[in-house]
Image 1 (tube, rainbow, N blue to C red):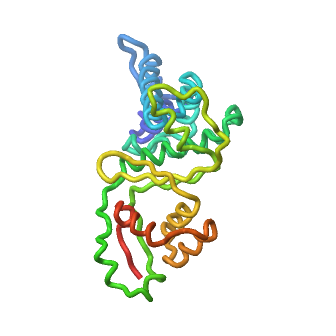
Image 2: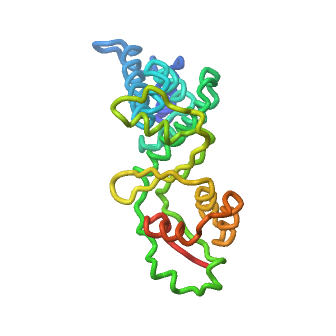
Image 3: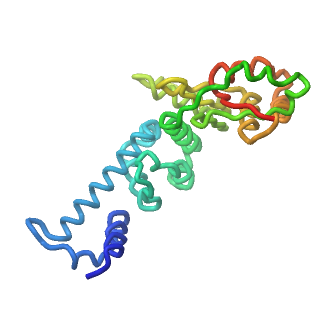
Amino acid sequence: MPALRDLQRDFAAYLVAGEETPLLDQVADARVSAAQCLNIHRNNVAITLGEALAGVYPVVQQLVGSAFFADAAKKYSRAHPCRSGNLHDFGREFPAALAADERLKQLPYLPDVAALEWAFHEAFHGPHAPGLDPGRLRQWSAMQFPGLRFSLHPGMGLLGSQHPVLTIWEAHQAEQLPEALDLGIGAEYVLLTRPQLEVELHRLTAAEFTFLRALGNDATLEQATDAAIVCDDSFDLESRLTALVAGGVIVDVRE
């Protein structure tokens, strides 16, 4: 009799890849054969994982069609088996898998649309954190402000794309798709927040995106502002910082 660990390993490998397995010798035939019994489990896992991906990536599914999506989901599930007890963790690498799929080269925006949907998923299931009390900013003088560092909300999402990903996403939230969608309008930058129970998506300018990304990478306020001004010399630090604090995007500040 194989050790329990070996049985579990073989069972997991069969569920994911459907490979030939020595388990057939360890499963007793009943009303159905051992092979049929194992196939039932494997099919249930494939269906569950496919439905999980479809739940996270509904716009991608609409863009490629249900049949293509089901095939892509099946291949992804085999290459990236779920390794977490939380099904919400499954699907993180799906945008990269779409980018590597040669069949999708005519849809260059698709991986970024998928990345936006994963960011939405993470924001929806992400942790809660109280926003920064504006009164705390009075602890520092104007001379100290350039050296301050700001912590962003742990559930916040930030995405920049050379494609109009938010426009595409918004079009697919409507009951009926528009007759024409201009995919040549260029880059879009998106901030995802969840101030209450619903995820909110906000368009950003390139300068605002650069500013937030720099803060998220632990840049000082001065460094983040300088990076934003390179994108747009009219960047308004005061109004942007006020909006980020009021919107709960900034949760902490330190020297």
